[in-house]
Image (cartoon, rainbow, N blue to C red; front, side):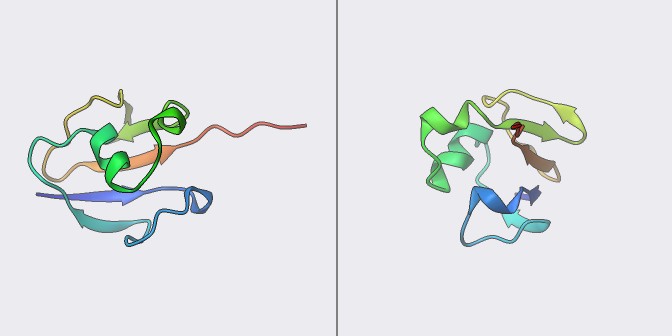
Length: 77
């Protein structure tokens, strides 16, 4: 199945361009997709998946045609 994946550049996900279409196996969760990209589980808790403009959990099962944005809140002073 195919999804559209967007993410901020500082996530440094290789092998896929932000805003591009990605092939994903049926039944894959957001967390499993992040595992595939080498993002450690301890770091995943800081990522908020936005799927089709709705906030979801990392255990959300991706569906064909989903638009996934990996939101990472950033703060500082």
